[in-house]
Image (cartoon, rainbow, N blue to C red; front, side, top):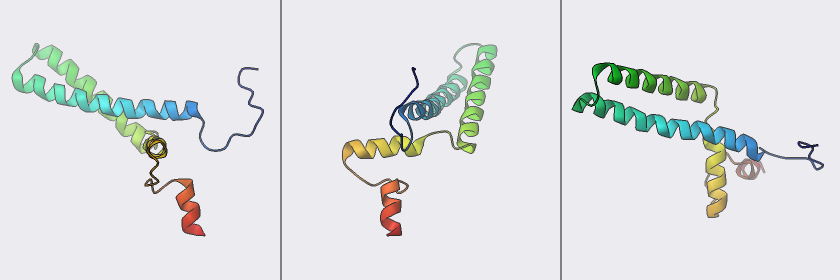
Length: 104
């Protein structure tokens, strides 16, 4: 079977981390789109209809990022925990190890 895992899996699987990372990527790209939308209006790039269309698409991106943040689907926790593991730093306050250390 393709999805059969013979050993128990603890924590969050890699596929979930990737899916949650897509939301972070969408947030970063939305910030870029917001910057270009403002520049488009300030400098008069494109025609009026193209600027309105780009602004509406940027607002849709902002609404999507808000939606992801509201339902806690951005995945900041998992990405920061992985980066801190790679760097050898345990500075992420919501890691399971620090929760165990604080409780004991």
